[in-house]
Image 1 (cartoon, helix red, strand yellow):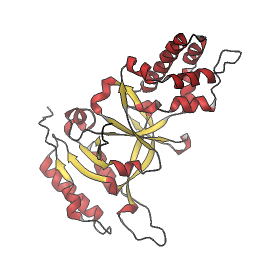
Image 2 (cartoon, one colour; image 1 turned 180 degrees about the vertical axis):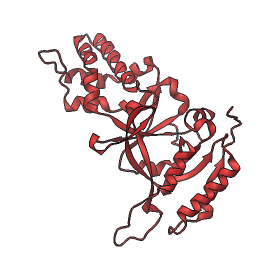
Image 3 (cartoon, helix red, strand yellow; image 1 turned 135 degrees about the vertical axis):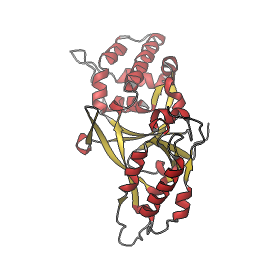
Image 4 (cartoon, one colour; image 1 turned 120 degrees about the vertical axis):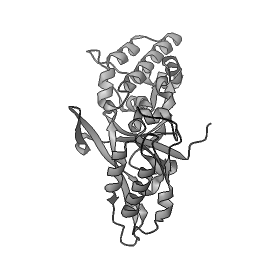
Length: 289
């Protein structure tokens, strides 16, 4: 098995980085604890999965299950109506699962693909986070995305998984599937962590949060009201900040260093010099024309 990366990168705009640093969140220590960098965090907006770059992710996943069930039924000489019922009720299943909220990271350290797609076309930044610290956050689940084409996805589901779904499908008199809690848990396992192989170059990891709608906030963009969930990532999880290849790197180095010095001065255990050293320039030769 491939070793897990030590650092995961979140590509974003310089404006977003500025807002994150300018609005550091502070959680007072418990009575017996001393104030430290662990009391400070960055507040991110986790995106609703229906509003991400590939809104068909769930459809891709469920279509794979339906085709895998159909082939399994043929192989095992089972009644083939259950895969059909499952297919007809896919939208009901999606409604039951609700909408998750995600923050995306990439294994790619300084990638032209990522700069173009997510780093303000090279004018943004890539914030590197310590993977192990992200994994210890109890507000959600961090996992690596699996990339497959349609044929690979059908083969991805083992016979035991498919037999379990087939056995747990109950159809009412109106031919609607009555999803049991066991079936729901079985189906949702990898649902948010499987994507079409077309996106494989992104080498994505997702931090997934499930939360009721009452906890959600909204913002408007291009005439669309978009839901998001506020999630705090410890400031201490930052490993590095890479300035994009099209940003004014020298001035950005200076201004980011000044901003971090202002925001972090006085926090116990923080070495300002070491934090400024974390800022680096992209080595990608790219000009945004």
